[in-house]
Image (cartoon, rainbow, N blue to C red; front, top):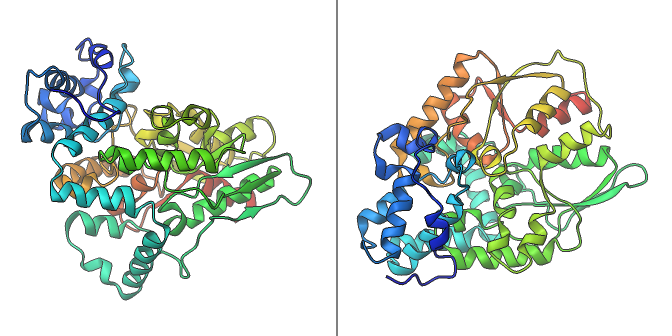
Amino acid sequence: MTWVTPWAPDRSELDSCVTCGLCLPFCPTFRLTGDETASPRGRITAMAAVGAGEAEMDERFFEMMAFCLQCRACEAVCPSMVPYGKLQEGVRAEILAADPKPARIARRMVLGRGLASRPAVHVASLGIAAAQRLGATRLLPGAVGRMASGMRTVPLPVPSTLGRSWRPDGEPVGIVGLLSGCVMDPWFADVHEALVQILRTAGYVVEAPGAQVCCGALAAHDGAAYDAARMAAANVEAFARYDTVVVDSAGCGAHLKDYGHWTEGGDDLAARVRDATEFVAHLIDEGALPTFPPGRGRVAVQDPCHLRHAQRIVAEPRTVLAAAGYEPVEIDEQALCCGAAGVYGLSYPETSDELGRRKADQVMAVDVSIVASANPGCELQMRGHLGPDIRVAHPVELYWEALSGS
């Protein structure tokens, strides 16, 4: 068959997979099922067969691709450096173009258009805030209920950083752009606040340009490629004046660093993007931010897939936690996916729940009262499975508490 979108899987990239199988032990869906079709190697073989016209793009093919969590753990261990995440996004764009079923169109409208609409996100956040205060979220069933139970309380009025700027108390040493994100603003305002105050303390002016939009990660992961490209182009323009763009959502940061194949100028912006833990750890190492003596307790470190596997950031969250006076505690050397994976839990609730339960068991096994996670979806998943007795917080929040003396 002939691929029809600009993001279609590239034959040379497909052929770069030598089917060695080193990825298999690191793939969560293969680990759960033992099924070759649920492995990166199996999925790439299927993509190549469809692209060559040797297999049909049928429901079985759709299911093979959709079952992937897109955690990119395979990329981190692949000796051939196969760009698996890019291949998955490309093939999902082809699936949406080839078979625009009502359910897929609806998802595209939510992920590709709804999240990019500030008014839509604001209205949805107001509804969630009202439901939380009425206790209605406890009545939601299944995966939706677990996600809702893992949410922080949405503040009223619903906060926004868009168009705002913050200055340090003294003479500025630089200026950075802040990615507001789509749900980070209303649902994780405390993370933004902690990051902004840390950067102010280090002497930076922080600006959240009002022209920015959702990063487009969820749209890209679901095949809404044209929407993802449109959002990428808007953000390239919005952040053009900043030498550094700081992101406190691991999934958003990973996607911004992959902007090169989404829009013109994407590579330039990608080179200027820094994860919050990456940038704060750098400031700590440079002496621009202080370190605090041990004594604040033990913290389990949950590595978001798009921080560890996609961005290859491992040491930095631990540096931030140790600088805050915490003892980082390891729970999973392979950093297997927690099962959040954006909206994956809505399509595969049993798989998502099983992976979340396993991650929660790893936390419970090390006897801690705090888990550090640098991604909103992972936090929701961990909260939903751990319950209220174990706190889940972003590493920069924990550092800001030490810095502010709280």
